Image (cartoon, rainbow, N blue to C red; front, side, top):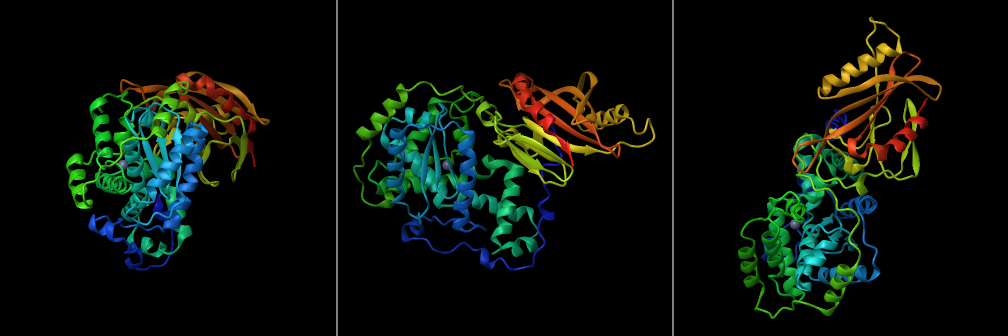
Length: 478
Ligand SMILES: [Zn+2]
């Protein structure tokens, strides 16, 4: 359901003094190798330490949301391989590198700022040899050492904030961090850190190829692997297991030629290694394991008010609840969901993967509504009808199912109404899924309403209903 409050206005958040741009220039340090390859990290407002802190924070969340593979042998292998590769970076690489495996057949890999790298099980299973897998990992490390995630965030901040405010934030790391948090809330971790530009891609390719060459692998292995993927799984197919990979890592064009040109620059030709017995053991091991839990739904890439891929694992509420103390109410909510908004305004409590900047697909919106006086002023019925009219104005496709029923929420009179409308999630044919909304409105002593809209696609509503009920029961006015 559409949501107007979530996209926060950055401009209201800062009030600081003015400094110049000079301090923002990225430290000019780059080892000779990087200079020769023309690899210079782009404009960045953040420090390397902030890359690490940011990566740590969001990787902790991602670990909760994605099905990680907990196989010690595979993890030992991928960490050994990854850490060995990072010894050959053309740029400073003193990050707390961690390598994790996501238990899914989709073929993808991604890196968060600060050295947190995720490789899908599917990637290891389809790689033909260790050099190809090393190529994918080396490419991801390229995004880290080139600091693409916070570079993109910096560019966004620079575009969205007036120069004066931006200049003032330099050196105020807490302000920058809070801006970053706001931005992640509004655009999501995925689009901020994981979708790379073509320029970023060719840089990550250059780093990856450099690392392969110096680590003693066939340096073309990375480009070859990407080419095989593109050929084997046409990206146009919606259910393509590589759709997300090429959405996160778009082909910069002429990849093979660029890599060959670079290789000739790197030094004398080498007989790089292609495989290792350890790789073959791990690949076999993975292929022999039970299939990953339920394949995630693959949905066309994010656009407008739609929400991209959402797997149930990313949105299912945990059975553990925690409390939110808002200025006007208290409520309990699943501890793997998050509160968006602040404690004096409307809030949305939702799984991060279930919302976008302007829509909620899974979660609960809580707001207050001031009915106009006049009509049957003061009556709960009238206030509820006014609320429904106002909601439908913002969302004309919303339809009421049945009638408003009476309900009591912690001794207070209220109404509950079932609604239906289009979900921001598209089905495999590109049409919005059907959404089920459950509106609960409670009258406050001043006649205004506090209301909750519990949202989920129709097909999942029964699974979410117990959580929504528990949240409603926990609601207390302050
Ligand atoms: Zn990439």
